[in-house]
Image 1: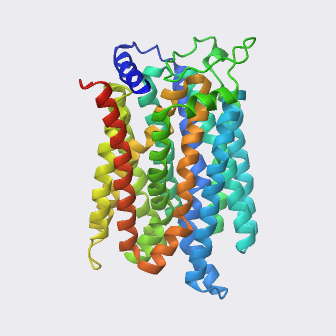
Image 2: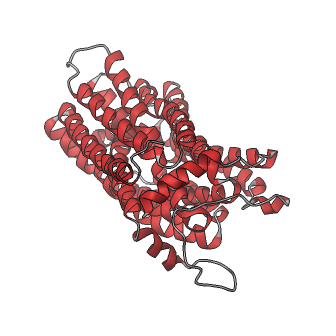
Image 3: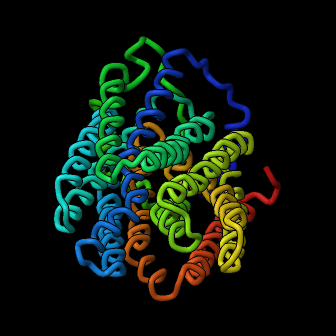
Length: 447
């Protein structure tokens, strides 16, 4: 039974010796982390620029609520495209290697970011943003694949925590840089050009220095102990076919639970990533620059959470991750209720502190799903595919964070929206509790 394997693997993880880490391992980790961070200069720019794009459309005679709903719909379609791209991206990485994915996502994102600023209306905005998000789906799958080849199973929690900082601190840094540019009078098109330039620099660095596996430097390959053993359908090359990977993953009850957890937690994360500057601008009266800076609180405290959760998961073993998931998501539901109950006229310190608390309790556990847990299930042969499937489930729900969230905020207000998000977090915590319950039934003795 897979739950028993989780327990046994958790015990083995704590006793396994960590292989020697060389300068090449550190360099690879840095290239992946900084490279994926740079993706966010071509992703967070849309969120930061939303108030400015809305204002521009209003000047052109578009009703502000109509503009907000249309731009929210574009965001939703973009997230949906990202979700659709995740599954093939993972399969491609597992079949052909991760470097092509990682670099291809960068190049495509730069091209479509520049296309976005070339248009002044909704048709070009829609095409460019959907294409941008679709091509960016290649990036994380490539990162996971390269990580599985470079780092041992006993360090998945810590290594993936460090790499997860790329989409948290990278997001926070991107927003801070853009807020400084806004303060100096740069328009939203300038933000997009700057983002494309920064991502271009990291593309060049990774193109020159990134290697697919330690074999390129005559270093030993990493150790793995996947929870799912895939049948080698190609005995000549000892390579697993994609259909065998999908069959193994979808036959696992625990993997399905992780996919369903991704639904709720990704919706929560995407909602905060997209709408936080607009919430701070509309509800708390912050300027566009102040709102951009304030929105960086969410990824910053999320990054702190990821570091702590990654260290704890390697200490507690594979089975311990589900307990951290349950506790973190449940506490994030409490913080969301508190955020909904914040009085209308209050200092910005209280709502910003609650936003930071939501991030701290939510994002660390969330980072397990398409990171360490996906590698736990798939290892080197199926880790990227597992990550792609988990992310695809999550971002299908995350598509609601655009148009759906805009409708709730416009029709019922931000307070009602936070109550809805709290209910989603509470339901997700119950799903996580089911995994803990199954593990406790299999092994009543705590890890």
